[in-house]
Length: 238
Image (cartoon, rainbow, N blue to C red; front, side, top):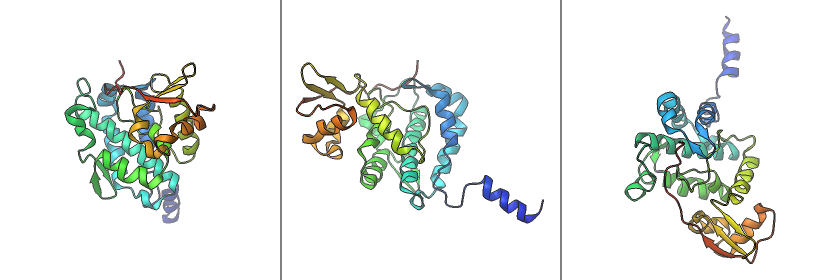
């Protein structure tokens, strides 16, 4: 094979140098195998997909998302958060673990590797994703592995349909009475605690009903607002 042909094949088959980890096929394949409804089969990941998960996270650790488009960056960081959380659950014995264990220690430990540094899941969410992208829809995409978290999708996030998928996530989340209950008869919204914890992202406490109305497709402004108890049990299948 000539040197020119080798260069052409390399350009076609390999990610470009400095690519932002935009090839999420490994994580996509894992999720399609292990997500069952709203739950994750952590035991199947541990037995069948752990090398692939570790390989994927190692690839993300070497990537340079800051060189990518905004959509590529956001897809990258959402996948990084969710994949790191899954790895953390497996490392902590999914038969016993809850994300709230030891005063939510899993969110404070330096588990995330990206762009030559290590940071916690809290830092990834609160110091990178939220301020950099200023998009409240991420709260329906970042999955903290608890039952009350928005359910994880059975696919990885991608730049090409990110906007559509994030909007669909929010609509599905708001229409799920286990997580957000719309009580028309009593004109009351019983919302996920996520809306309380991150109220500024949704326009402030006084604008929560406006946000819900926008994505729910009907006007619930003026409804009273309550917050549902958060179930920190692990979102494990079976």
